[in-house]
Length: 555
Image (spheres, rainbow, N blue to C red):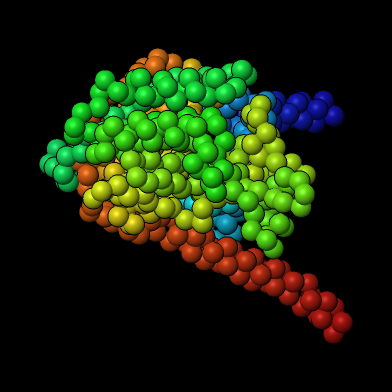
């Protein structure tokens, strides 16, 4: 009896030891991924970020105790909180965002685990993670809870000279690269554990090639790339308006517009083609059927009339009446007397003779887009102290034209969507202007990460980018993703740069996230295979008892 208790106690200690080891490995996974992330991170850590969790998965897949779903949830929760903790500055609802994203990631990882166990429970099965994860990343661009911020290819925004081949693959190519290296390292460790040194050394050679060759190719492209297109002079304004300012009134609206004029005016030359200001810089609401009544637009129109060679690109909130028969459209808002209206987050191009606008298509979840099943909140913001609610979008990207130039103007969150930004280029945009308001997050890594993502968009599309952020950071990027100029955070400023207007459409801009779409097809193949294998095993396990029963009857 004593021996039995002693054995039970040892087993219990081993279980507690395994549990502690599992938790530490999960935390290590999340910590490594967070430590790799822009802008304070060290990007190469992404190549080992999944290693601890994949080693845990392999142990559990081969019979060791452990609750993989909750361990993976812990790992991804650590990654989410440590990387995008700054969302808390805008709203306490950040907790829900972290938890949901970690939950989705854990679900994807466990689908991979279950498929691997059924179909190919060995080192080769680890490669199943690639299509599952890449399919999930594609989903983050398209479903109602859009959040591509943590897509793995974004990690290289701080070392953009390593990923010049994004003009062919987009960010999905970086995700594929990161996952391949992680899996190869895990497989090497498994082979070494099994004392299969010869096979391990072969895998090491493959891992080194896959790690190094993309960097060498990228460096070659970077060093030999020559910018294309004619010179275009652009002025960017950072007017520094506090988005949390509660003293919004007509006087304040006028002051913001006047600041845009005052900061840009000293930099305007006869060669200046565009002045770019930030998202929501026009605080005055504009009804699209009576734009001639908008004081801000009239002021800016008078300003650019002094420089007929120049157009002013700026963000603002616009409204329009809902057409009859469309009152049930989800973004429609009642205005009284049976009338409804739409609210837009818009970019406007103002020149001496014309006004053009486009409406934001990729809306920020909870701030600008409420899921339809939460219809009772559709006219309110779940995150910020403003009643912005569900906005009406343009169905697709729309370019705006001035003279011989077409420009694409992604608004804030849209600049995180590579394929969407590329669609401007497919429609002829030769320059990209990112207008944003990052002041909601305060002086945190949030606005720095957002700024660095423009490097990747510049490479994917081979377009120069002018970026105007309300409170910073604003700047210019060339077609290689280099930062040509940048402003300081929370400092009103204006800067001028000569950019190249390129009309050539890159392979990625033309074909979009094709790698992720291939991953979706492979994911369906794996799910079907998993189901087929499970069905075959279930049938076999069901036949044996039946045969035994038949033999007993004969006896």
